Image 1 (cartoon, one colour):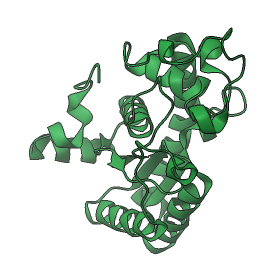
Image 2: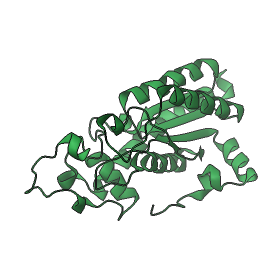
Image 3: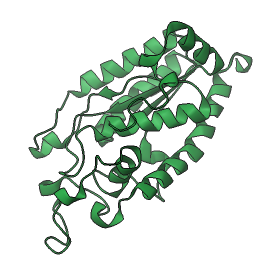
Image 4: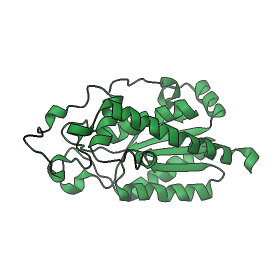
Length: 241
């Protein structure tokens, strides 16, 4: 992916212990990008959900502070349900167990806010992680967990989708050259594309996706998410106990 080492100073895997501890003291916020291994149409790479969520987390960390952990590739409620290949499906019990352990470990590490950005947002997948987030907010207080699919911050102006204008635009913004719209039929060949055949649900990416739209989505998400994250950090700070 283009720009793979963007902002390495906030990526957990690129940090040495002293830098990690310093960043955590300055802003004890852990970002957890959560996606899936999933087909997103012939024009997109297979890691869209996790790659998108990771880059969103990097931008949030740059704006609000904190540390970005490696992306989780583990999805429930994926395109495999539609007999689509190029996709891995995992049981919901595993999703819940992973979320429980991640949130527990972030608490052990001393983070006060956890931001789980859900790049894969099958409804049952989201519900499972948010169930565990509610449990963590009760059991690990005052640590706060925010677990949301990325379009929760951009809807209704720029709603989410599956492999359509929203996700394709993010990838055109984050990874120029990795999206190939020529892999899709032309408008003349197929004015509309069947969901099951093309795995595209939402605004037609052939006419609505662009790097500019991806940047607008990112700007809107930062505008709305950063105040929420900073408010959670203030709420979880020792002076609020």
